[in-house]
Image 1 (cartoon, rainbow, N blue to C red):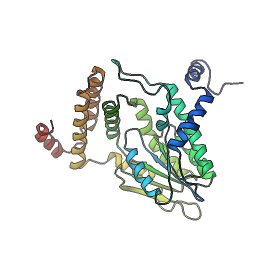
Image 2: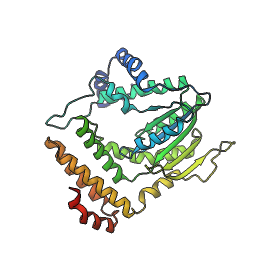
Image 3: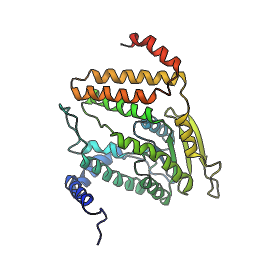
Length: 318
C-alpha cells in the first residue's frame, strides 16, 4: 500500500516529524487539562455561529478578532480557535534568547495543529459560537473546516482582511521584535510562509465565492472598515455580485494616502528603534535587513508629502 506521506525524502521527513511530536496520551492530557479550561470555555447555542477571520501573517487579525468577539459577546461567550494560541502549552515552546537566531520547531507547530483539530471538534460538539483565525496557508483545509461547521448546523461567516504585502511584512517584523522585547521570545514567520498566505487569501476568496458552505463574506481593512460584503439569500444564492477576490485585489493595489504613508513610515521607524536597541547582534541585523526590505517595497507607494513630513520631523522622534 502506498504511504499517504509519500516516499523517499518526504517519508523520511514525516518519520522525523513523528518522532518530534508529543506522545498521543500526553498531547490529549495537555488538551484536556490545560487548553480546554483556558481557551475553550463557551456557551452552548441553538444556532451557533462561526466567523473565520483570515488573512496573511502580519495583517492585523488580532484587532479584527477582538471586534468580532465584541459583537458575538452580545449573544454568547465565543471562543477563539488558532493553532498558534495552543503552541505555548507545548513543553518545548519557551526558549530564551541566544546568540544565534532560533530555528522553528516543527514538532511544536505540528502539535499546535493537532490541538487545533481537537479544539474544532470540541467546539462543534459543544455548539459554541467560535472565531477561527486562519492565515490561509492551506486553503483546502480552510474550506473543509467551513464545510464541517456548516454540516453541524453552524452559520458560517468569513471576514477577510485586505492588506498589501508590504504592510503585512512590516507587521510580521514588528510583532516579532516587540515579542522579543517584551517576553524574550517570539515567533518569526519565514518570508516563504508569509508569501504563501498572501497568495492563499485570493485563492480562499475564490473558494468562498464558488462554494456553497459560507453564508456571509466580508472584505475589510484591519481597522474594521467594510470594503465589500455579500450574503446568501433564502434560495442559497449570493445576494450581490460575486467580487470577493476583486475587492481584495483593488484594496491591495490602490495608492496610499498621506496619512497611510505616514503611519507606515512611523511604524517602520519605531520597529527599527526596537531592533537596534536589542542586546543581541542577530536581532539588530534582523531589524536592519527587515527594515530595508519593507522600505524598498513601499517606496513606490509612499505619498511624497508624507515622505517630506517624515524627514522634517525625524529628529523629534528620537
